[in-house]
Image (cartoon, rainbow, N blue to C red; front, side, top):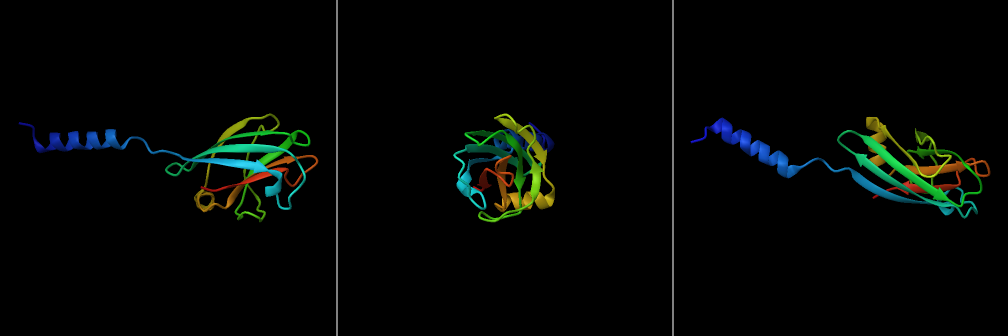
Length: 140
């Protein structure tokens, strides 16, 4: 007959197997010129596919775009700012000169709170639109 310690260990092991790993939050953010503040006339579009793991605060992304007025010169997660407002650079998106651009960063506690509150947006900049050519608010 198994002892209590052995049964407890088996029960804990079963709970871990059935619970599985924590899943990242997934976001698919459309990027366009009408979401810029102020809007511009670019026909460029894009998408930011974002994974966020609240347990580790790891933010991962894949930003794709096309139809910009020229080469992308920079891209960032900006915030804190609600849709329709501008915010400062929070997390740079390197290697944006070619699409897609992929990367990751670990957020601070404050950044994580702002991100989860929907106060971050993705912004892709060009020479013709240095304040941002296409933009999208990160929200569930």
